[in-house]
Image (tube, rainbow, N blue to C red; front, side, top):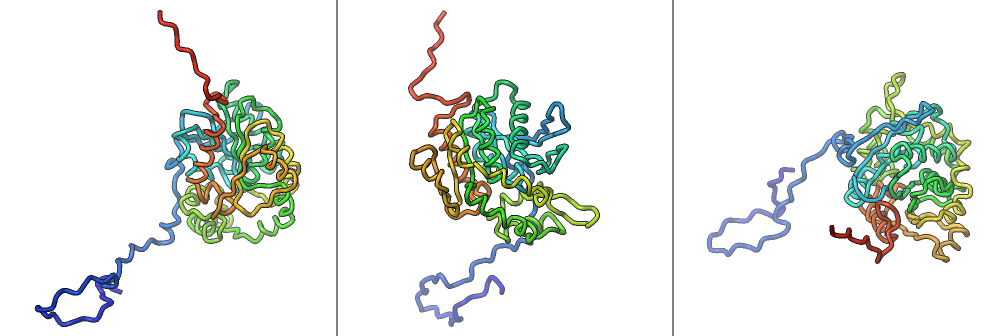
Length: 345
């Protein structure tokens, strides 16, 4: 319908009549310009959110891990994505945090742009060793204070790194939407879930659209930057498919989550558990929470990928966690301490 159409009936123009009061129904509001599906779901480059990317080669192997980096000051927020995701899952979060802290988001093996000798070895031990190796290559023997942030599978990796006590500068641990009891119970359905999802996409735009319309992601802006690196082009089928072959890694799934609660509680650093509201704490975590061993926040109106669905809120929660526990660029800063001024010469 033409935007100039009027919902009120026409009346005669009587000069002696006082003007009628304006009605909110007097005219139809202009319809916003239409956006085609290909434009609405078009990919966005990582440069809109991160400052730089890098490839980290691990000595003594052919493994090369891709990382995205943002910020130059403060403690290091080191982000580990979930199974089938990539480091770009934390894109919008990084852009919000980088004014307060440094951010590194890593593509785990078999994911994103990382390349490894065994793409299917997603064992907890291997992935946790990968994380430590990457941090060592980036920062040598003097890494900054580190807050590990892990989503889903990446949360299990983060907990394992903390439990191994191989990062002396580890100052905090944030686990995102993964609880041992619920995760283990859901594994029997995982193959069916993987097989039931759409497997082939004619374009990247269609994959982004599917992720949003299907409900796996609820934030279009995040999906536009995070989905492209979860795909690869299949020349034989002339379409895009999933980069990560999760269905072929089933032998490792149970190991990701068994014993997770005990390891989480035993990690000797401040801990934060973020849940999307659907998980129920198991007995171990319930007791631990009652004893004040970790902070827990249920984030409402979000799906499993909290960092993508509500990135601003997620970033604020991480920054508040850092502030609450007084984690500075070099470790935990005790309030009231001060550095003596240099003596005048």
